[in-house]
Every structure is written in C-alpha cells, then in structure tokens.
Length: 272
Image 1 (cartoon, one colour):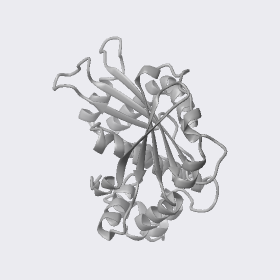
Image 2: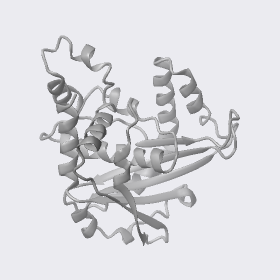
Image 3: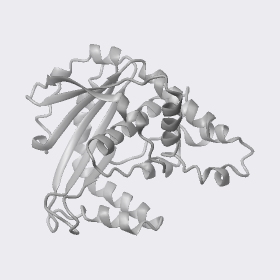
Image 4: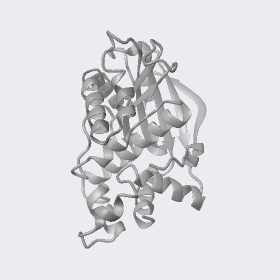
C-alpha cells in the first residue's frame, strides 16, 4: 500500500484538555481539511488501498462487467445510503484516521489493511480489536519496553444521545479478551500472504508471561463539531477499565465530517 500521508497535517492537537469523572485527561484534536486537490487525491488513493491494492483491482474487476468505480461502490465499499452502510463508512473512516494518528504521529507500526481487504460483506464490520499498533524498543527479538497499543474507536458524525467516548471506553474493556484472537488473526493472514517477517513481529506479543512488554489501551471518539458541543465528555468514566493506568483518551472533532467521509469514498472510487 502506498504511504502518502500529507493529510495527517490536517489533524492537529488543539491543546484543549478535558477531565473525566474519574480524573483522566482527554486530549482534544481537530481535523481541518483544506481544498487541496493533490492532497485529497493522495488521501483518497491511500484510503482506497485499505480495501483493495490498486495492483489487484484489474484482476478483481475482470469478469464482473463493472467499471472500477462501480466495483468499488457495489462490492468493496460500505453502502452510501442503505443502513448499516453509512454508519460503517463513518466507523471505518474513524478507525483509519486513528490508525494514522497512531502510526504517523505517535510512531507505532499499525498494520490495518487486512482488516478491510479481507472483509467478505462490505456492510458488516470486522470483528476484533479496532486498531492495533506495535513499537519496538531495540533490535533485539524482544525487549521488556516493547509496546502493544490497542485503540477502540467510535464515530459520532450525526446527532446522537450516546457519549461516543464512553462507548469507546466500554468497548475497550472487551479488548482484553479480544487481543489474543486479533493477534492470531493478524498473524494468520500475514503467514497466508507470505509475510513472514511481519508475522514474526506480531508473534512477539503473543505470550507476555514469557516475553514481557508494555500494554497500552486507548479509546477515541471521532465527532462532528455539533456532536462534540452536545456531548458531556467530562461525564465519561474509565474507572472500571482493567488497564486504566495505561489508558489514553482522545477526541477528534471536525466540521461536517459525514460530508467529508462520503467525499473521500466517492473520490476513492472515481479516481481508481
């Protein structure tokens, strides 16, 4: 997959912080895209490649009688209008954006294309941990300061009665159970594709008792500005989280986010 990520410059730390009911800090970030055709096109191509490699597109379209754009809209991308397609679009967008934050801002290795490329049903979310990242402290096979970072992401791009950050925190609790299955699935898919070196890097984190490492959890909410203003983030509570001492909370807000989501999907299809 290509790695153009100039769009990440549009994601900035506002410096604003909120405090949860349990005394934990919430970082407030802002996504502010600009009308820059080159960056938007590169972002759309990079986004499309989460679902299918451009090199694979001709062979996959062959025999369908569809154009590239039709194949992407009807077979690969979540539906634009029919439920649950729109909510899945916003969820996928949020996950990929948080993975970009993890990789390009925090410096973790965050393999994620297998989560979307191997999806059989375009309108069904992939099970397991939302976003996973790895950081290695040295060139040694394993080091006690290596880090496994698992983020749970929830999008709120239309009006809702739910505190989406609290939803992310609550679902992050489940990641303690889903972690082993997610690592196994990731390793299995890499082995199936002949990616032996990457599989070995994942394998390093499959037995903490034998090979100690640092585990970090995260909960993120990606909110439209209107939803952000109406959400009482300070009411969020993470005191029941089993890894509360190593839990990072962030909110990414932005204007007209659902309009942006659809625009990225449409450009990703049209420019294939």
